[in-house]
Image (tube, rainbow, N blue to C red):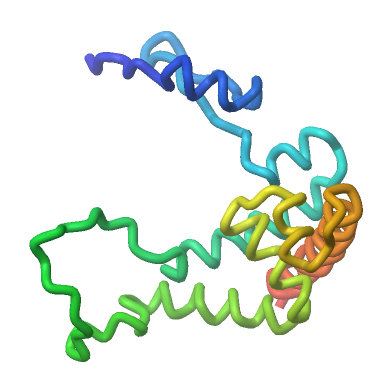
Amino acid sequence: MQQPTAGPTPERLRQSHGNFEIGGNRRDGQRFKMTDSPLGKALAREIISGEEYTGLKVYALHWFAAGLQGHLNSLDPNRVFAFDPAAMTGLARSEAQADHRQRYYLAREHIGRRPAFVADCVACQEMELTTVGHRLGFKSDYRGRVAALDILRDAGGRLSALWEKLRNQ
C-alpha cells in the first residue's frame, strides 16, 4: 500500500488564499487541487463564464502540449552556453506536438492579435489581470484590469466557439 504524500506546505496553502480543493479517498489519501491561477480565480469569482473558462483552458492546454512553455531545466554553471544547430530546438518533437502547435496557432489567428496576447498572458503564463492591463498600456490598475477582463472574456467566447466548431467537423 502506498504511503500518502504530505501535500502542500502550510506556506503554499496560505499563499493560495483558500483557493484549493481537497479530494481523494481513504485508500489513496488526500489530494489537493490548487485553483489559485488567475483563470481559476476569475471563474470562482464568476467574472468569466464556464464556457469562456473552458475555451481558454483548452487554448492553454494546446500551448502547453505544443511545448511552447519553454524549458524547465535547471542552470548548470559549468556548462558552455552556445547555440547548437544540430539540436533543432525550434522543431516539434513529435507528431502530437506538431498537431497541438497547429491548433494553437489556428486559435491565435482566429481570435486576433490583442485577444491572443491577453489569453497568452492570463491562461498560459498565469499573469494577473492587473499586470496584463499594465502591459496593455493602462496606468490605472482598475482600468487596466477591466480592459484586460473584457478582452479575455471576448477571447474565451471566441475560443469556445472555435473548439465547438472543430469538434463538430
